[in-house]
Length: 185
Image 1: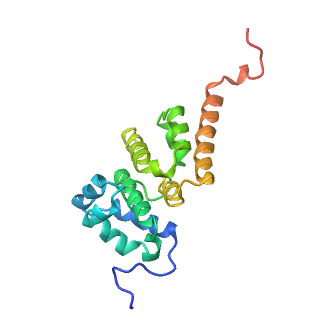
Image 2 (image 1 turned 90 degrees about the vertical axis):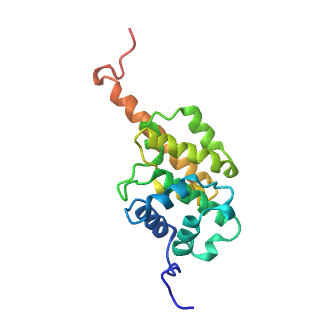
Image 3 (image 1 turned 135 degrees about the vertical axis):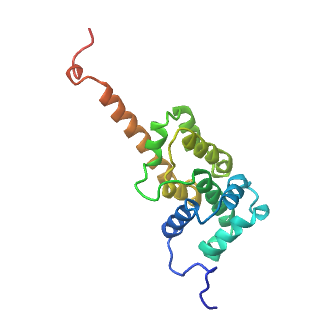
Protein backbone atom coordinates (compact mmCIF):
# COMPACT_ATOMS: atom_id res chain seq x y z
CA UNK A 1 0.00 0.00 0.00
CA UNK A 2 1.40 3.38 -0.92
CA UNK A 3 1.29 6.38 1.35
CA UNK A 4 -1.74 8.55 0.60
CA UNK A 5 -3.05 11.75 2.04
CA UNK A 6 -5.62 9.81 4.09
CA UNK A 7 -3.11 7.37 5.59
CA UNK A 8 -1.14 8.60 8.61
CA UNK A 9 2.63 8.53 8.07
CA UNK A 10 4.48 5.67 9.77
CA UNK A 11 6.64 6.39 12.79
CA UNK A 12 4.47 9.18 14.17
CA UNK A 13 4.20 9.57 17.91
CA UNK A 14 1.15 10.29 20.01
CA UNK A 15 2.51 13.80 20.58
CA UNK A 16 2.82 14.34 16.80
CA UNK A 17 -0.80 13.33 16.28
CA UNK A 18 -2.10 15.47 19.16
CA UNK A 19 -0.11 18.48 17.91
CA UNK A 20 -1.60 18.04 14.43
CA UNK A 21 -5.13 17.71 15.81
CA UNK A 22 -4.79 20.82 17.99
CA UNK A 23 -3.42 22.77 15.04
CA UNK A 24 -6.12 21.54 12.66
CA UNK A 25 -9.04 22.09 15.03
CA UNK A 26 -7.85 25.62 15.74
CA UNK A 27 -7.40 26.56 12.09
CA UNK A 28 -9.82 28.32 9.79
CA UNK A 29 -9.40 25.46 7.30
CA UNK A 30 -11.24 22.93 9.46
CA UNK A 31 -14.62 24.64 9.33
CA UNK A 32 -17.26 25.38 11.91
CA UNK A 33 -19.60 22.57 10.78
CA UNK A 34 -17.16 19.70 11.41
CA UNK A 35 -16.01 21.37 14.64
CA UNK A 36 -19.63 21.54 15.83
CA UNK A 37 -20.07 17.86 14.92
CA UNK A 38 -17.09 16.93 17.08
CA UNK A 39 -18.32 19.08 19.95
CA UNK A 40 -21.74 17.40 19.89
CA UNK A 41 -20.64 13.80 19.46
CA UNK A 42 -21.24 11.17 22.14
CA UNK A 43 -17.77 9.90 23.07
CA UNK A 44 -19.16 6.61 24.36
CA UNK A 45 -20.60 5.77 20.94
CA UNK A 46 -17.77 6.10 18.40
CA UNK A 47 -19.59 3.96 15.83
CA UNK A 48 -22.38 6.57 15.71
CA UNK A 49 -19.89 9.42 15.42
CA UNK A 50 -20.19 12.01 12.65
CA UNK A 51 -18.10 11.90 9.46
CA UNK A 52 -15.80 14.63 10.82
CA UNK A 53 -14.47 12.22 13.46
CA UNK A 54 -13.93 9.37 11.03
CA UNK A 55 -12.08 11.68 8.64
CA UNK A 56 -9.81 12.90 11.46
CA UNK A 57 -9.05 9.41 12.68
CA UNK A 58 -8.44 8.08 9.15
CA UNK A 59 -6.09 10.91 8.32
CA UNK A 60 -4.13 11.27 11.56
CA UNK A 61 -4.39 8.18 13.78
CA UNK A 62 -2.69 4.94 12.72
CA UNK A 63 -5.17 2.09 12.38
CA UNK A 64 -3.42 -0.14 14.91
CA UNK A 65 -3.95 2.55 17.60
CA UNK A 66 -7.72 2.16 17.21
CA UNK A 67 -7.91 -1.49 18.24
CA UNK A 68 -9.47 -2.62 21.52
CA UNK A 69 -10.75 0.46 23.30
CA UNK A 70 -8.48 2.74 21.24
CA UNK A 71 -11.35 3.95 19.06
CA UNK A 72 -13.35 5.06 22.10
CA UNK A 73 -10.31 6.77 23.66
CA UNK A 74 -9.41 8.65 20.47
CA UNK A 75 -13.06 9.61 20.02
CA UNK A 76 -13.10 11.10 23.52
CA UNK A 77 -9.84 12.94 22.90
CA UNK A 78 -11.07 14.41 19.61
CA UNK A 79 -14.25 15.53 21.41
CA UNK A 80 -12.23 17.20 24.19
CA UNK A 81 -9.90 18.96 21.75
CA UNK A 82 -12.91 20.21 19.78
CA UNK A 83 -14.52 21.54 22.96
CA UNK A 84 -11.31 23.44 23.71
CA UNK A 85 -10.76 24.72 20.15
CA UNK A 86 -9.41 27.06 19.23
CA UNK A 87 -6.70 26.65 21.79
CA UNK A 88 -3.09 27.80 21.67
CA UNK A 89 -0.68 25.60 19.74
CA UNK A 90 2.22 26.10 22.16
CA UNK A 91 3.05 27.48 25.60
CA UNK A 92 0.46 25.37 27.38
CA UNK A 93 -0.28 25.84 31.07
CA UNK A 94 -0.05 22.56 33.01
CA UNK A 95 -3.55 21.18 33.52
CA UNK A 96 -3.44 21.26 37.33
CA UNK A 97 -2.30 24.91 37.35
CA UNK A 98 -4.97 25.85 34.79
CA UNK A 99 -7.58 24.22 37.03
CA UNK A 100 -6.31 26.07 40.10
CA UNK A 101 -6.22 29.38 38.22
CA UNK A 102 -9.84 28.79 37.12
CA UNK A 103 -10.89 28.19 40.76
CA UNK A 104 -11.65 24.52 40.16
CA UNK A 105 -12.95 23.20 43.46
CA UNK A 106 -10.62 20.87 45.36
CA UNK A 107 -13.49 18.41 45.84
CA UNK A 108 -14.01 18.26 42.07
CA UNK A 109 -10.29 17.75 41.58
CA UNK A 110 -10.32 14.86 44.06
CA UNK A 111 -13.31 13.31 42.28
CA UNK A 112 -11.58 13.69 38.91
CA UNK A 113 -8.31 12.20 40.14
CA UNK A 114 -10.09 9.21 41.67
CA UNK A 115 -12.49 8.63 38.74
CA UNK A 116 -12.28 5.37 36.87
CA UNK A 117 -11.38 5.64 33.18
CA UNK A 118 -14.92 4.58 32.23
CA UNK A 119 -16.19 7.81 33.88
CA UNK A 120 -13.92 10.00 31.71
CA UNK A 121 -16.49 10.44 28.88
CA UNK A 122 -18.65 12.39 31.36
CA UNK A 123 -16.06 13.91 33.71
CA UNK A 124 -13.51 15.19 31.20
CA UNK A 125 -15.90 17.07 28.88
CA UNK A 126 -17.26 18.82 31.99
CA UNK A 127 -13.73 19.74 33.01
CA UNK A 128 -12.91 21.13 29.55
CA UNK A 129 -16.17 23.10 29.38
CA UNK A 130 -15.43 24.51 32.86
CA UNK A 131 -11.94 25.64 31.85
CA UNK A 132 -13.12 27.18 28.59
CA UNK A 133 -15.96 29.01 30.37
CA UNK A 134 -13.40 30.47 32.79
CA UNK A 135 -11.16 31.59 29.92
CA UNK A 136 -8.67 28.77 30.35
CA UNK A 137 -7.40 26.15 28.00
CA UNK A 138 -6.70 22.53 28.90
CA UNK A 139 -3.23 21.20 28.20
CA UNK A 140 -3.84 18.91 25.20
CA UNK A 141 -0.86 16.63 25.79
CA UNK A 142 -1.82 16.03 29.43
CA UNK A 143 -5.41 15.35 28.35
CA UNK A 144 -4.11 12.92 25.73
CA UNK A 145 -1.92 11.13 28.26
CA UNK A 146 -4.81 10.86 30.70
CA UNK A 147 -7.35 9.63 28.13
CA UNK A 148 -5.15 7.43 25.98
CA UNK A 149 -3.25 6.04 28.96
CA UNK A 150 -6.47 5.03 30.68
CA UNK A 151 -5.92 7.26 33.70
CA UNK A 152 -2.48 6.07 34.76
CA UNK A 153 -1.45 7.12 38.25
CA UNK A 154 1.52 9.10 36.90
CA UNK A 155 -0.77 11.22 34.71
CA UNK A 156 -3.16 11.86 37.61
CA UNK A 157 -0.30 12.70 39.96
CA UNK A 158 1.13 15.25 37.50
CA UNK A 159 -2.21 17.08 37.50
CA UNK A 160 -2.40 16.99 41.31
CA UNK A 161 1.20 18.20 41.69
CA UNK A 162 0.63 21.14 39.38
CA UNK A 163 -2.63 22.06 41.14
CA UNK A 164 -1.08 22.02 44.62
CA UNK A 165 2.10 23.78 43.49
CA UNK A 166 -0.08 26.59 42.13
CA UNK A 167 -2.02 26.59 45.42
CA UNK A 168 1.22 26.77 47.40
CA UNK A 169 2.56 29.60 45.25
CA UNK A 170 -0.69 31.56 45.63
CA UNK A 171 -0.63 31.06 49.40
CA UNK A 172 2.99 32.17 49.61
CA UNK A 173 2.26 35.24 47.49
CA UNK A 174 -0.69 36.16 49.73
CA UNK A 175 1.35 35.85 52.93
CA UNK A 176 3.16 39.09 53.82
CA UNK A 177 6.91 38.54 53.82
CA UNK A 178 7.34 40.10 57.24
CA UNK A 179 4.85 37.78 58.93
CA UNK A 180 6.54 34.57 57.89
CA UNK A 181 7.78 32.76 60.97
CA UNK A 182 6.21 35.19 63.45
CA UNK A 183 3.75 33.81 65.97
CA UNK A 184 0.15 34.96 65.70
CA UNK A 185 -0.80 37.72 68.12
